[in-house]
Image: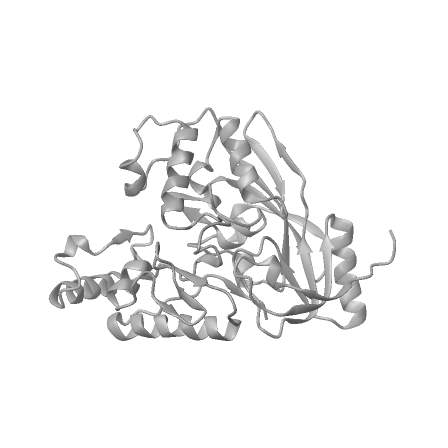
Length: 348
């Protein structure tokens, strides 16, 4: 293998859906495992920090960029087996995996359609939507241990999945996700758990029908990347739906009704969690805090389709985006006593 020669001063904004941020001092696109390992060795020898990027749909790049080596993980092998096994490299576009599964009648990913980004991000975030979580169908995750530069397969139990969470998210300096092995259901029924989806499709709807319905729902909320959509420069859901203790859920419901923010307790959206906690709708909290869809401050605003998406209208800076997000978080905290957690990763 030839000596690795990273590029210098590569703009990172075009590699993100927010189109924000400065350059990488050094940059490498790792299309295979050998290049990935070589990049870490180069960084170690050169005394440079390493940051990883994939599809850029869940990433915020600082205005000053990244003073170190940015590795764009482009591992792009993908294979679909008749028994429902799917193995996809971290750099494979996620929609390609969903499309391949649905067209082959492999159930388990149909509700996760339309989510931008690459396959490698899915176990990190434990992505979920419309009643499905990717952890439900992951059989193993192949990772590179950054300390030993050895590849290993980790079982779901080893990944420690939680709500939009995993070991890989909590320990980003330890592992690089290289590939994901899924176990889907050949000829299986579609997952139709989510209320909004149940109103759109019949109980016996096909995988394709469910996927189409989810795409329609996402488009209506500007949650599908479309170059003609004025809300396109975003990172999707900017805040996580907060998971709270039953006492906090009851307090917020009672407060919302007494203050007139909701006509009755049933109109306050909340979803029971297996842990006994409750997941609240961050978008609902944001709007009841006085932040409306379509609100705009300078180069940034709230999507006019969904209160969870913050939109870059062009000409802005990352510092301005983060200040805008903090204003929204403060409004929710002041009104409900709930701290919203940012979902996109800040490249530090």
